[in-house]
Image (cartoon, rainbow, N blue to C red; front, top):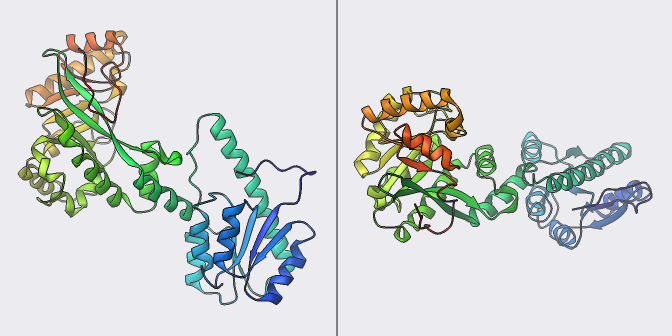
Amino acid sequence: MLPARHESAAPCRVLVVEDDVLVRRAYERVLAPQYQVTSVESGNDALAKVECGAFSAIVSDIDVPGLTGIELLKAVRKTDLDVPIVLVTGYPSLESAQDAVNYGAFSYLTKPVDPCALRDVVSRASGLRSLLALQRASDAAQGRAGTDFGDRAGQEVRFEAALRELWMAFQPIVSVGSRSVLGYEALLRTDEPTLRNPAALLAVAERLHRLEELGRAVRRSVARSIDRAPADAKIFVNLHPHDLLDETLYEPTAELSRHASRVVLELTERASLEEVGDLSERVARLRALGYKLAIDDLGAGYAGLTSLTKLEPDVVKLDMSLVRDVDSSVKKQHLIASMARVCVDLGMLVVTEGVETVAERDTLVALGCDALQGYLFGRPQRAFENVAL
C-alpha cells in the first residue's frame, strides 16, 4: 500500500508499457517533468516491475507483446488491488472498450494520444491511488478491511483466492431438554483477508455471476467434513436461492447427495425464492434424495409465513433479531410463542438462533423452544465441538 503523498514527497511513479519506441519516448517526455517514469516494451516486463514495487499509475497499450493490456490488468490485481491502469489503443473498437470498462481500466485512450489528455488522466489516476491508499488505511484502522473490492479484475483475483482458502466452520444446535447436540450448522469461511466476511464473499460472487461455483465449493467442503461429525448429528447447510437452479445439486452421485440423509438444507428467508419458478418440483427432488429442508431467518425476510406453505419445511429457524433480549421484551415473547406454536402444530422442529445469555435461554425454554443455537452453547469452529450442557 502506498503512503499518503505530500507536496514535498518524491514524484509519483508511473509505469509506461509501449512497444513502439517513438511513442514510448513521447510518453516519457510528456510525463517526466511531473512523474518518475519507468518504461517497458512488453506486458511481461511490466508485470515484473509491478511485482518489484508499487506504482501510482500504469499506462499500457492494449496490444503489447506478451501479456496484453487486459491480461496485464488482471495479472496486476494479484499484486496490487488499487493501482489505476490506463489502457491505450491505436485500433479502437467497441469490444476493446467494453473489455476495458468491464475489467476496471481507469481510462481508455485512443492513439494518437493528446499530451494534455495524457497528463490529465495520469494526474487523476495517481490522485485516486493516494485516496484509495488512505481509505484502506482508514478501513484497516477501524476494523473494516475488506469493505471495498476494487474493480472487476481485482474482484476476480480475490474471489479465486477465497475459493482456494475456503473452509467450513461448524456451530452446534442443541436440545436443552435432552441435554444433547442435535446437529451443527456449516458456516462459510475463507482465509482470504479481504473476503473473510461471508456476506462480502457472497456479494462478490453475485457481482461476478459465480454464485454457482461458490455453492458447489461449499457443498464439496461440507461433504468432505461430514465423516468427522458425531454419527447421530444432522448437518445444516445453507443454500442461496440460486443454488436451487444448479442441476448438480440434484445428482445422486454428488458428494453431498451421498450424505443426504444426514443433511438439512437451509433456505434463508432473507432472499427471495421468486426466481425459482418450479420450486415445488425442485423441493420434491431434494426430498427424494433424502434431504430435510429448513427455512432460515424466519421473521426477518421477504415472504413471512407464506414460505411455510411453499416449502413445507422439516425445520424452521427463528431469526436472532427475535431472540435478542427476549427475556426483557413481552412483545417478542408473544411473537415467538405464537410462531413456535404454529410450526409445532404443522410438525416442524423449531430452532431459535442467536442465543447468547442464560436469561435468553431460560425464557425461550419457558416459551416452549427446546432446540437452540448461539454463542452461549458454542462458537463456529473448524472441529465438531463437544458441548457441555
